[in-house]
Amino acid sequence: MPFPDTRMRRTRASRFARDLARETRLSPADLILPAFVLEDEKGREAVESMPGVERVGRNGLFELAERCLAAGIPAMALFPVVPAERKSTDAAEAWREDGLVPETVKALKARFPELGVITDVALDPYTSHGLDGIVDADGYVLNDRTVDALVRQAMSHAEAGADVVAPSDMMDGRIGAIREQLEADGHVNTLILSYAAKYASSYYGPFRDAVGSAGNLGKSGKESFQMDPGNSDEALREVELDLEEGADWVMIKPALPYLDIIRRVHETFGVPTFAYHVSGEYAMLKAAAERGWLDNDKVLLETLTSIRRAGASGILTYAALEAASLLKG
Ligand code: PBG
Image (cartoon, protein in one colour):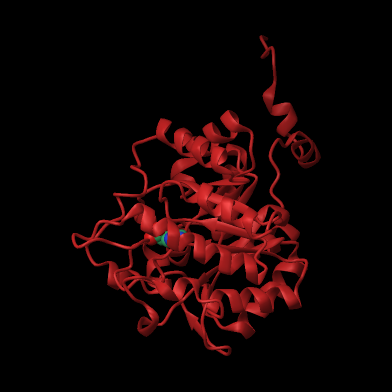
């Protein structure tokens, strides 16, 4: 009787052999938990389109931080929920030294010095129109004026003690401008995680609900600054520019629909490449799981593992705590 020359199934036949042969591992140390922060200390509000995710005030945030550290999750990324009355066309609230983000960073770092704190550098939570910059009369986001504002915003975060500033706006030249000012101000060890290849994606819908920018945004899209989903070479160019300007780490966003980009960036540049498993990716899984159409736990771990396999060194995911507890179990 003929037999196969090679039996691939031999290495899959037992659990111990599968474990030993596994190429990609997922651990809580690969994960970053994004958090939506409210001004009200005791605040706690569910985000309807993101089951299991809450907007939290200082108290809730401390609880999340404690749970992250206990679970082995090394860092959190903060996203402010700014009340409508503090939004404006010039986004001045974004760089107020005693604004929500700097104050939250100070409090978090004082209480949890070992937790990595990443701040979002972008104007969209602070603009009355919900776009990521200062606009002209036609609603076009002005690049260079926006960069000036981003520099001020990033400095207010660094000054407060943020470990990593993460520009997520896609303006040209902002990484160089922020790096130069960080150096000038003596913040030589503040990391820059650049959202280098951020696509004009419709997977951000639930996030915009969470921070309250969806309604303000109305019909205007972000295509004039975020990347076209059809492009891949352009992502390499974006990453190259940001690295030249002084980014330490780069981010690809969203994750699952852009695994090919993660792989190309990681292979081409060999720098720490992060991926953002965004709100819509999270919401899709939760919705299907709620209906009993997908196994939440298994699909979650498979998804995060595939993002790692593509080349991501770290993953921002709203399911970080959930994944960490599954990995432990
Ligand atoms: C905006 C920003 C967005 C996200 C993070 N920062 C949305 C946008 O570009 O409109 C989306 C994250 C998510 O969907 O989870 N600076």
